[in-house]
Picture: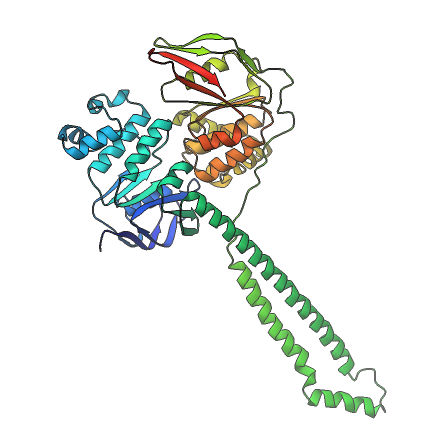
Length: 503
């Protein structure tokens, strides 16, 4: 085939460790340009990218696509294949990409010292240098600040081929993608336009489906009422056509009953009831075949989740040593019991260090503070999940109800051997909410969350009655949940000096 599209025909796939199919008879065509792949945790977004690029073989079905395909992994632990060759090539394309993504020519030799954002830029640059016909990129903006995101966006926009993008970054999906593939098993649907347009279309489709189901339900009730009426009439007619109870010499009444039976009127109601029964079965099958999207409630806050103290912490005006090389200059900072603060700034400006400093100054009992770090180790994640599993049934049920309201499927989470970083975050939030927190501090909470979960978290935090302090590069997320911004930036040309401004 040509290089203008990737075609998946009747694809069936399941992992060896799973008893259920991830995809069954999936068919979709992915044309030239960028296609966003959107869906919840565990719906198969990453698997779809790996199938399309040939990293994974399908169990059944046919995949037609260009031979030269590259999949960019979500993690950045290992040095990309051909990275050293890319940096050493000296050709025009490599020089352009190094300049565009601000790569250092010594990065291959000091990979362990690079930030996750620098590694991701190196990964994407190496992939683009190879000029693949199909490029699949998995969560490229995790850990990237605003400037790095802009560099990455420009690089991805320069790609002239078939692009697949999994991302929780709505701005990237909106500005880069021509269409989005929405995965909500068993439904997989391509919608034209960017993520925002596709989401609006999905909302309209859901409302239409709900209206159609409501109309079909009303029609079914009407048919059942008609059947009940005819059944009552038939019973009444049967009693009228019975000769039982008539006087032996009432020959006139008996003749009328015989005439009714002879003319066929005796079976009319029965035949009508039979036809109505068929219509009822058809209507019920039609309703059962209609797609229903299960939506979870999102209210998660409990009474008492607001401190009675006048302030949660106070940082006096002065300097804070972030590290031996960096100093932060702060104005007088106070946080009230219901203040909502977003912390912004470029990579390396000390946002996480500021959070650790704040945690040491909070005047609240430890159990009244939820802290979600930027990363949770696999060991910690397994410990959290094991702790939830060991809770009494009623308590565990309450925790999993909160998790479901943050956009995850509790049953799947409790069965998994390895919870995702996003699922661990939800468990930590649920465990903290159970204690009625007075302050929630989050460091990059959207990094590992899928889009439905980000939106559930947004809605939950919008209604949060307690204090909220959040570090994030996701400006759309912060705009919805925060009322005040603390921005960290380098102080002019003075290296190592950072200033905090309040907006």
